[in-house]
Length: 164
Ligand SMILES: Nc1ncnc2c1ncn2[C@@H]1O[C@H](COP(=O)(O)OP(=O)(O)O)[C@@H](O)[C@H]1O
Ligand SMILES: [Mg+2]
Image 1: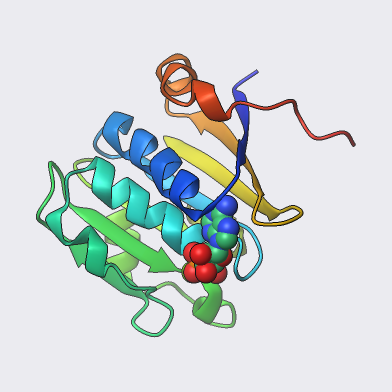
Image 2 (image 1 turned 180 degrees about the horizontal axis):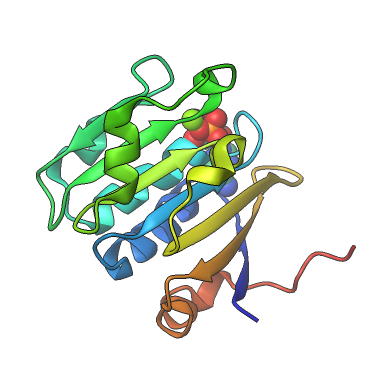
């Protein structure tokens, strides 16, 4: 199995989990985020930016209206995209397709399952669900060959899989 099940108790933990992923992500990896509005996707991306040592992560904003925001201050370029607004678009803008397929950059997409056909081969799929209180269930499916390292880094948040 290539899946890791986590529980994040609060916002800071979600940022820390994203940070651990950001520290491990190989260049060229695509990160697909799914989960309803308010699940914590954008905060998770802040964590990834932090893990990449992107100095500007504190100012990271949701790209809902700009489609793609790019950051160049970290160990490798980070592109942050939100597919939500592209739901009805006939095609993805070329710059987004290029970012996704760039094997030197990391691209993270919120609402990624809207355009599953553009996902590259090497990706991590992160699904976020809202539980009681501030808890979030975070399920990571590794298709980038980093599961063992991830599991080690995320040990303190590992939880039992959700019951069907
Ligand atoms: N465990 C948690 N993880 C992430 N966000 C949380 C958590 N608990 C509460 N929140 C809050 O939920 C909201 C998530 O917002 P955001 O990251 O913009 O979500 P999304 O991008 O999925 O719409 C924030 O206000 C955040 O503080
Ligand atoms: Mg968001």
